[in-house]
Image (cartoon, rainbow, N blue to C red):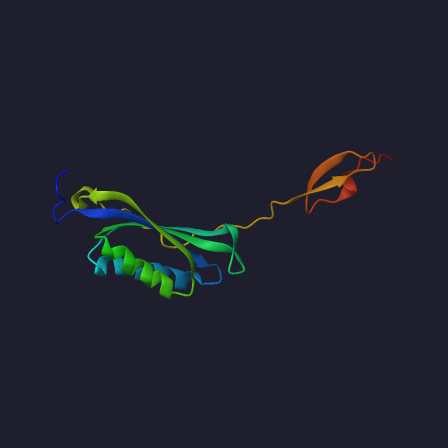
Length: 155
């Protein structure tokens, strides 16, 4: 295996979750700051995707939702330590995970894609259904807003 040349870097992806109580403009400012960290450390920014506020798989620090951000970039191995140090300092970051996608990536082979920094606007809805029994003992599922007015009582 040939030794990597000086222009070879590694391709990384970091997923971090911000607290939901952070304002959208503050989240955008922080995401832009993290983009600047990559460039300051000599890395190449590829793409940032702000996936918006989503439900966590488990509760973390009494939070059930978080703003998910996916960041892909190229850099030397030391870039991850600085990137994660900046994430650890920020109080709004609940979780973070970085993995190596490609250990020998040539920066000339990659081009930066369009970023999605502003969180998507998602209308939250209550998808829970209630199970109720009618007078005959049959069970049906209802939306929480439904009433038992349509029981079929004919007059």
